[in-house]
Length: 251
Image (cartoon, rainbow, N blue to C red; front, side, top):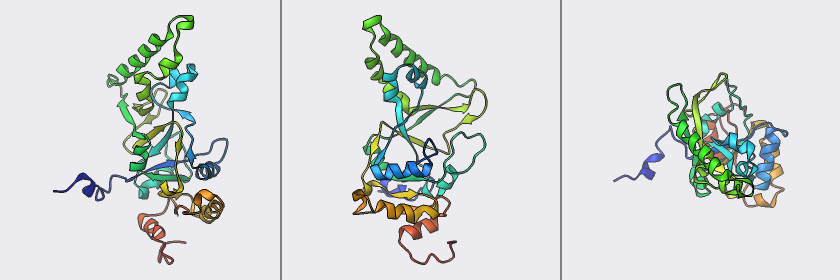
């Protein structure tokens, strides 16, 4: 009798990997990827989930709601994550790093749970919001009796970084789950060079990044493979296999 594990490799709609794409911040997406690879650490810089409003008021809560984000999009469809999509706030430039879902799960990464906020379907987000409010009321107390640390570690706030909304947004636009399949890891995530499945970067930067990483003792045993998100699956396979002559594929 077949096992789930033996069948999953034939599911082309599912990915074995999770990918973290960098973006332009105060530093470029290129520099952010370089820092991640050099340090072997993904930094949880931003607050996510349904306690964002509370986190903005209580610093102790904010520190528990910062997360690293991933998508489980199959590698050959990574190009879509880097496309200029109408109505989308986040823009990726093709720089990122991929890990296996097994590795990410081992470190505590978890799929995001999306709740429908389409008008008339707010019955799922309502209970979550009320539980967050109740946790805040319970922790407020009076004066010296307030307990922000206890609030930050409450059961509901352990869940909120992994809970998002889907549907039309106030003020226009919408947020959906079906094409992004997001995962999150609360707090910084450390990794070794051997944990990296592949690095995404525009092809013109591959050799520069590869040569630069060889100067880091972390990569003396293994420098990760590089692919371009715009490549098709066959070219990715050929590159990962180390094929010298890729034939008809554009250079």
